[in-house]
Length: 183
Image 1 (cartoon, rainbow, N blue to C red):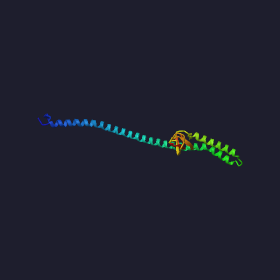
Image 2 (tube, helix red, strand yellow; image 1 turned 45 degrees about the vertical axis):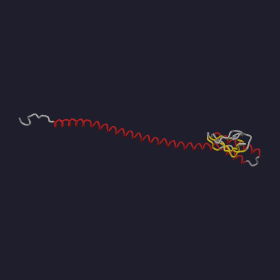
Image 3 (spheres, rainbow, N blue to C red; image 1 turned 90 degrees about the vertical axis):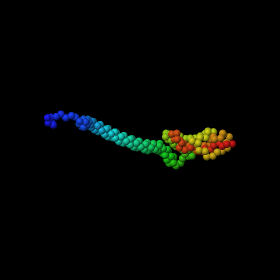
Image 4 (cartoon, rainbow, N blue to C red; image 1 turned 60 degrees about the vertical axis):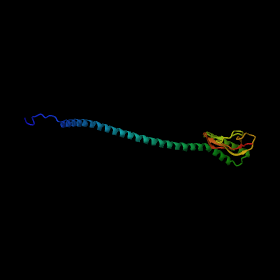
């Protein structure tokens, strides 16, 4: 028998080569699955990144639109307030245009103009703070100018020197008052 005719007995080294060849074939088969999964993850990452960028841009656009809207609200709120004061200006100008007005006519015109002004302020939720004598002093609404001896209990209002005003539950100007001091 020639050397090619004899069957060879497997050696431990041949088993290792066969196992490696089998494992290599398995790795080659697993490699495309792994690469496909990696590619799918990269694609998902790109989609999520795109969604994030769109969300950030959308948030920025929403913030910008809100700022523009607030600017418009402020602008038109002042415009509305100014428009409500124009009839008061008209009344004052008409009163000043009268050359030979009597004292009573001037007084009636001033009262009518004051009512127009108070009405315009009320439409914009500006209301007076006019505490009555004997009312309890509130430092959030009143500013004490002085304390005077009085028969009234301490820390009560004796007189209002100047009305205060508030707008939509916020004090624009506190009322100036004198307060009863301790006796």
